[in-house]
Amino acid sequence: MRLLPILLFLALAVVFFLPMLRRLRLPARGAPRTLPDELVKDPVCQTYIVKSRAVRRTDAGQVRYFCSEQCARLDSGG
Image (cartoon, one colour):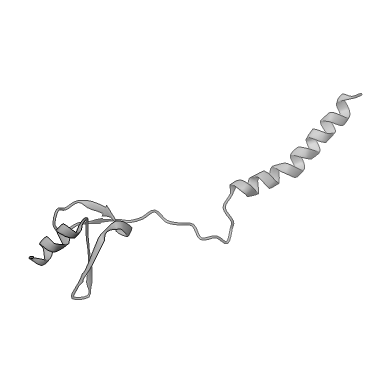
């Protein structure tokens, strides 16, 4: 007879606490998900660099991405 109240308590605990635990693990529905950063190719040394860390240069309205300041200088000829 002692086992019945314990099993009832455990069943209620699972029913109430499992949804709460799931909500903690899942991201909020309204929160925007971050996308992985895009890779871009350096036109000078032909290496790929993460866009957010690349050195950006704009030439005639076109954005070019470089892996370093040195590659950006080599591209501009000086």
